[in-house]
Image (cartoon, rainbow, N blue to C red; front, side, top):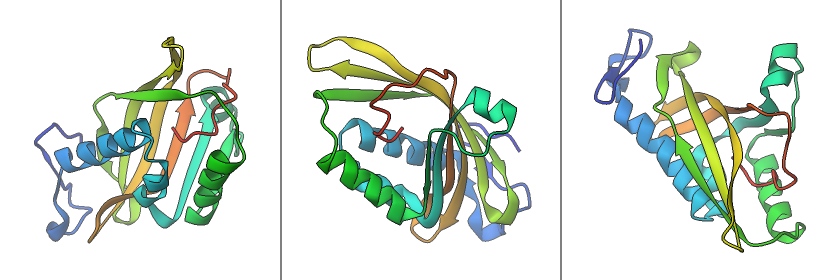
Length: 172
């Protein structure tokens, strides 16, 4: 069931007690992006379930059926290692990111998860003030709903371009 801004998500595959307003999912997706854009990188893993996967690939890899793209983290442990490496091992010039999200398409998926597709662009502004398009593509998410609210069970980031910036170590 495609949803609008104020539509309640429940096509019968979720228990009646789990009717979730589409605005809740949209707010969750926006909070994720604001957390990254505000540099609150330590809070990134909190958006994922303990056993969640986070993967970045290209549209070309996906079309050709390649199973692993550019980044693959299986579980919060690998995501935490990624953050430690970003903060302690990588050296890069100061910059900021700005995510722009399209309106999410939300459908009920298997096992009570929500299947959500959201187009995105990310702009990067360097310390010099120069801004540029950093990435564009789509998020293909499976979102779990639990007592703590929505959490990613899976986040697949599909980039439009196969030209990848070296600073892709920062989560998208």
